Length: 203
Ligand code: MLT
Picture 1 (tube, protein in one colour):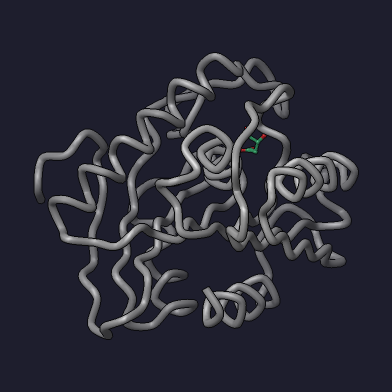
Picture 2 (spheres, protein in one colour):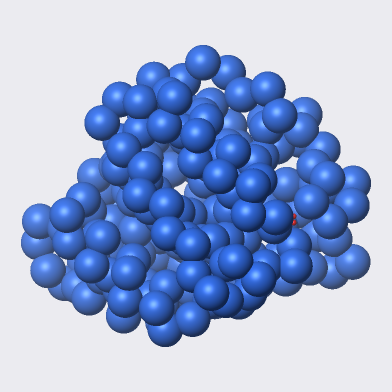
């Protein structure tokens, strides 16, 4: 494994012409978690899957939180910038185009923060169970950037209006946001996979 600034897994593309996926796990996950999902939703695409550097009671995350749904926003900013730097390193090391982020839960939240802080590093993003990561986001230019958000109507962690607020922030910055709300909870469903798979064919 190449020595880059995040522990990660990289799976090279087997099909040319598709953007790589940046797979971002949820709390307690790791770099292996989303590889099977990546292979299902984007067969043949390169997969880049880092492990979050924060440990919360032994569980990897991408940034610190003070409580469930209450984020240490200074840490969110620092960690989003570190992850954006890692994407640059990985692109150079593996000769990759800008990736499309596919993040779940905490991974979706760091992807949303990166969109606002370092929009140039991502070609687009699928945010599965995301919430607002920054209460006062900087003015980002996301003109034309494709973003899929999939929320769960019954999600006990993320109130629907919070997800709607994130969709509104991204739209106000110029992103083309497709926000779906499924009749499900925080966990991913088969429908998440099929919606993400078909959305990816247009990115
Ligand atoms: C977060 O901390 O990013 C969200 O509360 C989702 C989670 O990871 O539980």
